Length: 495
Image 1 (spheres, rainbow, N blue to C red):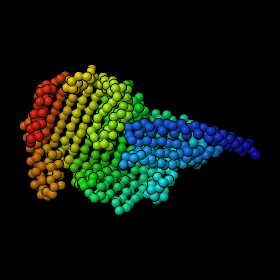
Image 2: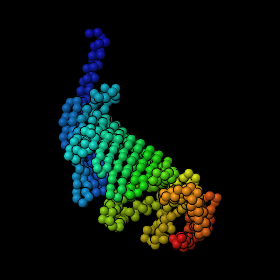
Image 3: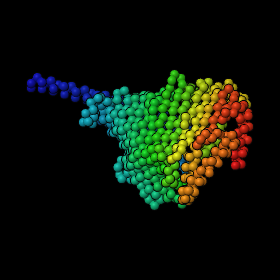
């Protein structure tokens, strides 16, 4: 053997020894890692279901360990109340074929040479509760996942839901499948989830008429870095090319180019967020209405108070809401003295930070015009919650600014759409109805001093600060404004 060959052989032996030793080490560490991950998963399930009637649990049923690989079997159970209010348990089982690191063979085969602790190959097993799922997927495994676990406990994974198809005399269900990728740090402080789905379609026949739901071209991108309030900071978005919903006995509503974008940030001890919804094309009963936008902004939210109030809302208020809805009764909150004291204290802390709430823009744009609204509110600490309601509201409201703009051409478009839906086909008659309604709206709003007419726009503005109201240029006290609103509301109702 020449010198080069001897060196090469030595390297192979050393690498082989290191790989074998690493695989043995991974096998020794694996039970602890799995039990720790399952414990964290159960904690997250408890948090997620804390405000609902559901319960979830994950168990490691068995672990068959080898030198280079192991096989784990998991059992998950989800408990809920059925339609008769009786407990029902759904059981699912998973098998996980785990390749030991540091150099799993599957990663070497794909030239991924960065050492990892293990590679997981997960799939759902056929059980009585998943049998129908397998049948709908034509015998394919309905859910699979493949991911690598780093020595720092970080996770990189790819998961897939298989296409499903079901059809009977009552209707049909078709699902193209969904895939998503995840990246998470070992402590879950950083998280990223991206995925997409081509098509989901549901058509059901009922005695009162058809019910349909269809979504095409959905993608999502979410995650971020966990902040002090426990929320993930950063951008997230959802996009859907087309969404169609037809309620029972009603025409279909169709949304195209739907997007939802969110941004959450923390600055020192304050939380800020932006939420936007856009619809590129909105149609009703096959007739196009236009485009819509909703933009919200929140700022100066005290981080600690927001976290505490959110937790209180999830643990105390949401369960009460669900119980009231199930019993078809109005919601009555019966908080304990301790919970009420906590609520008051955290609300004072939140208001002391002078939170800002803003409806940046709410708009509807038709073929010939656009109407939009804006609302901005700054809150303040009222000092004491135990005071008359009107004084409490006045002291809590630092400033308010609102502007509503109604487009007369947009009103004409909406009235024309309504007329066509009612069977009117003469374009001239449709146009005349639209013009008459838009002109009547302008005359009524101006005559009742609710707005001003500026060209083709009906404009209403409201400003409140320092216990003074400016409504469309008229200065008045809050009491005078309330009297004015109540008087005109009665007139409007009569009209």
